[in-house]
Image 1 (spheres, rainbow, N blue to C red):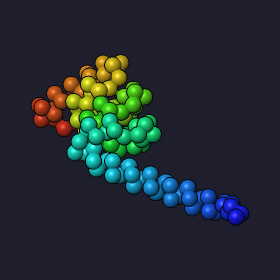
Image 2 (image 1 turned 90 degrees about the vertical axis):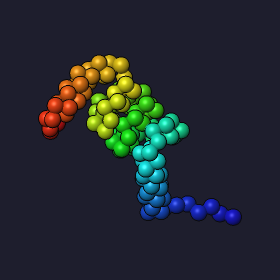
Image 3 (image 1 turned 180 degrees about the vertical axis):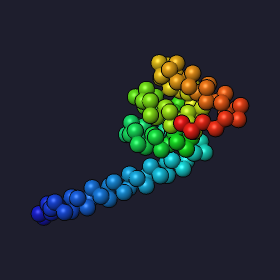
Image 4 (image 1 turned 45 degrees about the horizontal axis):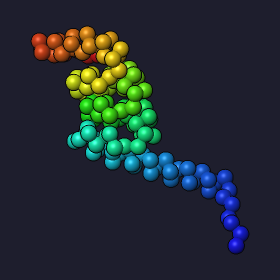
Length: 120
């Protein structure tokens, strides 16, 4: 039996389906992590290394940063998104970045506590 060779259009359609499936999978993960940060530690490395996915996840539950890969814990954008959602997530950031951002977070919390609305 002769094997069917896919043409360019069929390959593009397969790629589109694969992207749609990956996006649906990420949406399911995001919803789960919103309620349980610890679930993020069981996610495959591909998602943990995908900045866009991690940004979305820590945007819903900053504490998921604990289970992110090291490169994401060093990424300023990812860490900022996590601590915007939950300032306690700062403890999971890379040590150097923690020190750098700790002053900022403390200033924001103090301003918020004192009734100031900072638009950062």
